[in-house]
Amino acid sequence: MSRARMRRERVLEHLAKLRRLPLGGSPEPAFRARLRADLVSGRLLVEEPAEEPAKEPVLPAARTHRRPAPRRSLLSHVATFGLAGAMMVAAFATYQAVPGDSLYPLKRAAESTLVRLSTDEAQRGERELVSAKTRAKEVASLLGSSDDGPLVSKTLKDMESSTRSGISRLERVEPRSPKIKKFARDQKETVEPLLDQLEEAQQAQATGYLDYIEGLVAPPQ
Image (tube, rainbow, N blue to C red; front, side):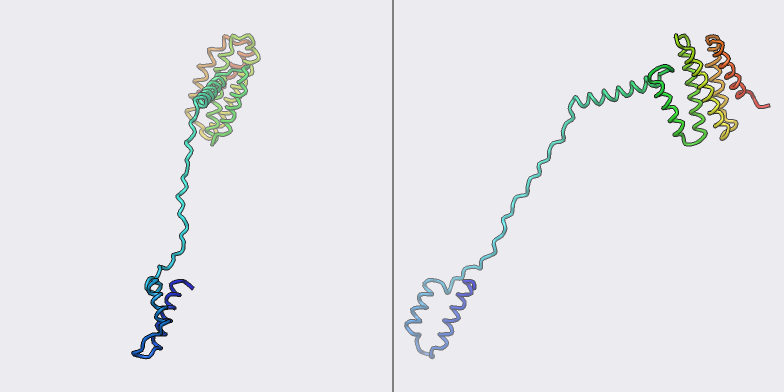
């Protein structure tokens, strides 16, 4: 039981005793002495406010410490640019490689991949004709080197193989495509000036190739 309720009970008890007294009479000395003591002490008049439940202390919100974003060091920037530069140099060197170079197989693999990744027959044919043009330029680059014999012969053979494959694909989807005639004229301008620098067997290869592409330019009978 709370202290406030106990005080109220005591007041009610005193009032009950007062009601039991006869009218006009005075309370007993003992009751008056007890009542006087209670009034003097203030226990009957002043009630202490009811105690409120203790509130939990509110803790300040924890501060979130954000770590500053790490700055990329100068060394990492240099390494990134160095790697990008090395990749560009490697790609350029691969593109410029000729038969006999260490990067040449990578160049041929990249060409084959482009052909396989083409979306349709016409695109595959066009990319094979691009490979044929590249072989013609490689033949021109090989002439005059000490070991040009076998490499030139193989490159001429690969040029003709790519040409026939590309023309066959284009003729299936675009029988009279102007791309075929343009390719034939460009190849003739590249290969024909090389005849005088080729060996006899190589000249026979190149002549047969020129006869084939000449038929692509000639109008149909």
